[in-house]
Amino acid sequence: SQTIHQWPATLVQPVGSPLSLECTVEGTSNPNLYWYRQAAGRGLQLLFYSVGIGQISSEVPQNLSASRPQDRQFILSSKKLLLSDSGFYLCASTSAGGPYEQYFGPGTRLTVT
Amino acid sequence: QKEVEQNSGPLSVPEGAIASLNCTYSDRGSQSFFWYRQYSGKSPELIMSIYSNGDKEDGRFTAQLNKASQYVSLLIRDSQPSDSATYLCAVNEASGTYKYIFGTGTRLKVLA
Image 1 (cartoon, rainbow over the protein chains, first blue to last red):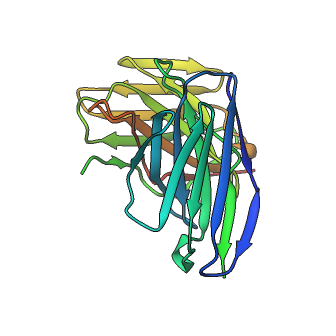
Image 2: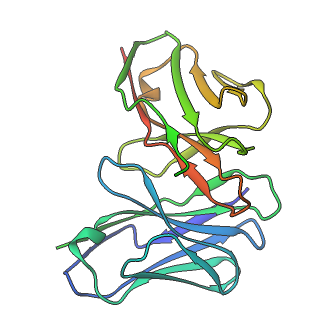
């Protein structure tokens, strides 16, 4: 089964600072990878997904970007954080070709001050 | 806009009772359906997947799917206080984009 690692677990950053969140996956090859954000008391918002190295689809035209430098590594970045970027960031993975269950990492709680 | 609808709750049930959670979806072509449990401050945990019409049982959990009615449900038998959490319903998007659509979740409270 898949294991998804995310770090850091918590982060407090000032407005205007850069961001880099990392996600790595074990136990599967060529997974589909996803970044979601969950604001307090809200649902999951899909930010980016990737079906292969260097292939990124963006769902939200904001100040965030994503990259996939290796098969099982997914990175979420920002050059300048906004207050509205605060939230719980979740990386998820799905095995390419099925089964189609999506598994989540432990998440990173980001507070922008 | 493709949507997954859930009652936000809270749904309160006494310990030992059956909890029934419901979900409707708008994308008629969706083929894969999932239930997640999310404890406060934690990430979602997959508890059930269902792909065919009918019932699928796993321990105390039963997922029910009716594609004609675009309806998915989750039954939790012998509910325990440890089942108190938010339950998210998710479906795959049928357009081949590899995306999943999540509901906003139903908060379940099991009263001891």
